[in-house]
Image (spheres, rainbow, N blue to C red):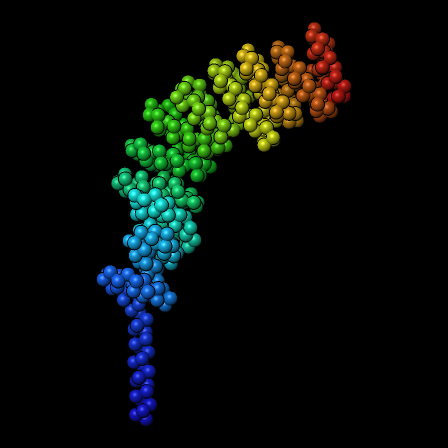
Length: 389
């Protein structure tokens, strides 16, 4: 009986000793780290991780050891695992490294935060980033915006906290925000106040801010179509920003059909260089975007300009685009009223190529055959009628 009691007591003590040792891995590792015995610290932190003894902070502390020895790649691997396990202190550390002097470290910080999959950790990351943005330290705000700019993940949840920074008096903060906003162009476009503010920067005297706004609109692509008239005016009036503004126009692409309806009038007072470059936008889309065929009637109006280079570019673009869309038939019929012989002849060719689809053009074409004194136009119209009827 005594032997059994002794054995039971021994097992109880042994069990307590094992559990006690198990619970002390992290504390022992921390002591070793404090004493500068880093190899032993990493060994015991690793045991703590295996035993799930404060594993998140163990990963974070191993990362700190590697970082202090300039082993940055290993450090950020540990920080990433720590954040996945829920370590807020690891998040704080990685965000702090976003303003580190070494570019590899800054990029690694953004990459680490980009790769986190734990939804709860992602929420904490966003919360901490926003808290910094709401602070009054402009330097920290700038560094945090740089991290956000490099994040390879959906940052829409914090866009509402970023947009107000456009009102910050610090020029660099404004520039960083303008670089970030194209990541969610739909949200920006739906925020009229924000979108108009960006367009308003195009009239600013500060060249850096103006250029940043131009880049922002260009990078928003099709979502910035409403900014095309302002960008084109900027290109026409300001030689210093002309190339950048026209690059933005090229990125955004073709205007809306409503805007295109008045293209001839809009470009009438613009330099011929601008006319040619906007024609290039259409030409570059030929074969890539079928919608460009709907703009043939609008492009045809450029033949009314007297400049030979503009006329030649117009002809070249029309040839590149090819046959117009059937949707344009009413617009083409309306162009038959033009006094410009080249426009009328090209329109007749287009209508003839549609065949029976252009049946609404029969009467206008008959009228041309009956009234025109130009034998070439009469012959082209007669041929077109035969194709259509």
